[in-house]
Length: 225
Image (cartoon, rainbow, N blue to C red; front, side, top):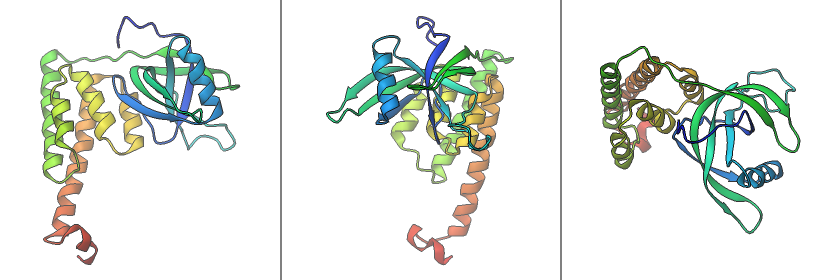
């Protein structure tokens, strides 16, 4: 987290389906609901900070937009208001947070939060080794046919700090939202590395099996195999 940015104890929050924001990641958002248009207008006059948390569908029925308690706060880096009153913005994740209490819902949800700090029992050499293992798993996934663009690989390679590399990789490459949420909630950096490496190995095994099943067929003819 950028220590020069003070995180408020209370922040507005957006609850979004199929979305997990990680620290340092850039999340584009299209703001069209009246409550969120009001929220963005308010925060742009002040801290430019709000939280994003995922929609927890397994919570009790009837609860209004139930959310995961662990999310991230982000800073609005850019915002463009459209002629129809909607806006497009870029939110950069700052740090993991735990939502402690909902304070009110109208005109938009505001919550009290606690900043969550990452921890690690590992030495820097261990983190470097884990980064190399994850890099190898990602490169193998690309070689096995995962649609990872070269420019994404080049961008990830330029990230020097291991934890930032891990979180940006998870945000960019992890497709399963439940697995993403699990990675977000894993505060120990070494354990988070190991979890994502394991998930990449599972995905690579799936790609190997798919390649065997496909044989020499094209993508259009795979259903004939």
